[in-house]
Amino acid sequence: MPEKIKQQQAASYSLLIQGNRDYVKSVTDVDPDFFTNLAKGQHPEVLWIGCADSRVPANSLTGTRPGDVFVHRNIANMCIHSDMSMLSVLDYAVNILKVKHIIVAGHYGCGGVLAAMGNNQFGLIDNWLRHIKDVYRLYARELDQIKDEKQRGDRFVELNVIEQVHNLSTTSIIQNAWKERFDLHIHGWVIDISTGLIKDLNVSCSNTDNLGQVFALQ
Image 1 (spheres, rainbow, N blue to C red):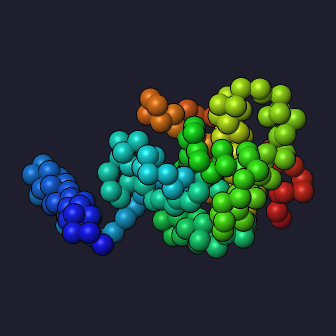
Image 2: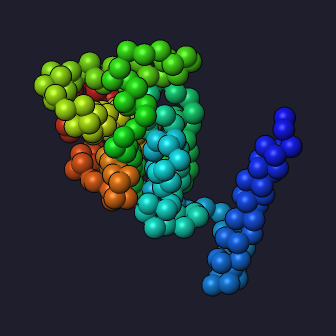
């Protein structure tokens, strides 16, 4: 590897360490005991299930601090019933941390959603994209009528979030919690990266009333 490239890589890595030092100083200058108190435990009221895209960090977008939001992220903010990683995070958040709000957060221009709209192969990720394509299949009649590709992609992002809210609502983890609690709510949001603003899709769910008989577990 050329020496110049090595130096560039070392410099970009060093920026991360220096950024950490600067961040810690900025926080402790205001609150010297912040990290000491943070180390005592976490009590977040929110679980954020978002996209892995680097442009949509939960704390920055919501103006919250470390300890406020429990986070799980994957390609296109999917809530798949066979995904043990997502289910483990969900179970811990709901049953141990007792979060009150679960937010499925998508974003316009999502690469995973846009890739699922096409027919190209990308490799291993194709297996993940199949789950997103299943969402398209459910809403194909509506989506196929949208001729503008960007508008169709934006609507697909919204419908994907709506479908993931539904998927969460049908898990035994959520439904068993609803039998014991009345303060657990699931929300669907979409972030507009071009403005930084959050759009609430108003698909909040806090019980099984609207799920349909086949999805409501006894």
